[in-house]
Length: 578
Image (cartoon, rainbow, N blue to C red; front, side, top):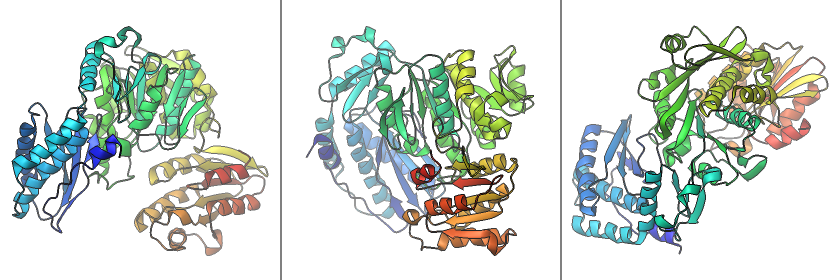
């Protein structure tokens, strides 16, 4: 049994239970997140028939008692209520996060006993058990390095296996069980590099890729994390969903790296927090209904709160680039004191006008040009028609992504010429931006492939392509089974903005998530019929690749096809010669 497994299984703490109370496993928080910017632990408690204020009061009392008994008088507590439950968190030293889980479980043991009138365990013995784990987990050399790194003004990144100080070209990495004394570290060789976080419901991958292209155009060695891979320059370090803190640490520890562009998704923020507290800039592209119902994030405003966790990573004077056209972003922005650079498709947007009047930086679209206001004057950076990503200006969502990337690039102190060169050279194809409205030609028809999967992203793509001329229009639709019937109907109705002549409903056999075969195509077909389509306009396919093949077989010169591909992406792209 290795050390981590031994720590994870060191204690089993049982609490009183009831049908109307459910408790998720406590998890370690290693960086800034939804609740705060402290390391520690959080547990999610779901309940009915209980006043949340009673739960929070019990938590404050019992968790404080546990912390004090452990000698953690300097550690803090917080909580967040949501419909149907509460998040309960305590901070802890960075070398005691597994012990913190047991501390939180101990505190909850006494909360549950009071709530349910159950007999509680022996407090002194339970605290002694946690203290025994603390002794095993303690790493005084790590705490010494954290203190020294803070004194030297350089970032430190921690995980179960490695500790690193500095970023990229200014970083050094050590095994967690072989750390040097702070006096033996060559602090003069360690430094941070410009780091940008990009989050949002849609557009974050494209914005991250575009920012990296701009950084490359400046001559810097740039790298990115994403939901698909971690890359430095042209070297892919690993493939997979690396939109969490693990991907960030992998990237920031590469000695070649000079600028970091980190895509961060909701899941990573809520599970573990963000990987650094030393970001130069961050952007929130938008907030829309997607992936609700986890970790107590049940509404779109609550999702906005989670996305805004990136503001907690910013260094003093760091820039938060925000979409002034998004209602949820605008609303949540009132709760941050960060240095905001607004961006918008409309020069007359009220927040853009206010920023200009107050001499604050902002960016916007005006008369077909992407403009940056530097606090005193406008700068015409590039014409939209010269940015291939915008498809001549019809892809409004990609104009917003370009504005976000420009704000980040300038906040990272990259030159305007690099912004122009990066935007002009970045193509909406399978090479530069795979899966995001990639265009192909098949039998003299235009074929677009996009991985859009929620109403917001599908609406944006369909709105953009609905303006393109076509003899006939084809669309391929499929949905994962873990969405509700209404969600599937809504997404289907949104896709019909494309005004297709032919709809092909594809089965996603690997994503049924408990549904029966044919159930989702039935919902797609029923929605299309309710929206005025004839039965002979609706086709079915056993898989996305079969659906794509069926559409390609029917295409004639002048036709237009949109393939919304959620699985079998490589097979579909191979058909198109990508």
